[in-house]
Image (cartoon, rainbow, N blue to C red; front, side, top):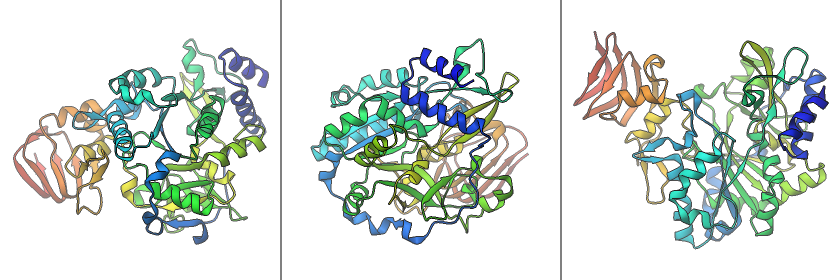
Length: 452
């Protein structure tokens, strides 16, 4: 059966490394390996580094050794989008792509170093992304291509473990997760080019995480201590209990466990934030020479812990084989986890995240970095009624005339169909409940607010 997949992938022009990687994962699936990870421990303090112990080590000259890679393959379908999520306006008229690009151009201008920016796009986002970035001709003057494209894996029928057939050829494939980064950057030749041009460290993050900015102090720490791989982690809260957590195996090696990799009888322990106290921000720092050496010594493959993702496509149960980028922490001896403040983790996964960024709780500084307003200890906790705010179109419709001031707001809960005009200020903990559609303008909101 594997031959059918190999033939299918060769016909698509996928590289030998991609085919061999998929083949390894397929054999795991066929042998009954579901990718579950059990019996793990909380990481020891010796594997954790505190950001306060690193933050004073910054050196501008290290910018000549750092490449910034943004994972940009998502379409934002969870927010009702059908194009690259990074095209979405997120602060004023500026999109994620505008802000990321201006960050890099500003770093180049202020430091004098040609900081490289690369996007790992998917087939669905490559064209739209590059077309949008044409407005920044200076960006295209860098030494390396601006993007490389994530690979794809065949979908597998749960019945028979054979290739999934569909009249729409695109439906026969799935993105293999951002764990494909290592194969994609190697097979494209970009890893070799980066090392040849003197780049030593890659800072990789999601394009929708505007808190993820280049910090030379982290690279300086890696250089001083010969760290091959570093994952930025944050302290888990109740909101993070279902996200992937940092753990450790019996030998003391750090690893990442996603909820899809957790056995059912360990789910309660998985969500115990007191035991497993740190989650992966997906801000990853990689020593490129260490990555190159790993690939050389492993037959040019990066085999990561497997995630078997069951789905149903047009009534057919299928499997998608995926991996997580952060799972590579278990592939490098001496890898570390850096405990960073939440200011380095400001992702936009849902419309409530976007509303927070739109508001005055966040500001854009002169380096085009999104920061919490001075004096704010944390972003406001926002919960929006999914009936009326679950898509970007619904969100825009209800905040078209104004976004409320949230700089003094700790929590905002909205139940019902509520639209906003100008001059609305939310203070403290605000809970708005409306049984009929309502529009609020020029009002200070605090505590419980009801509209019948």
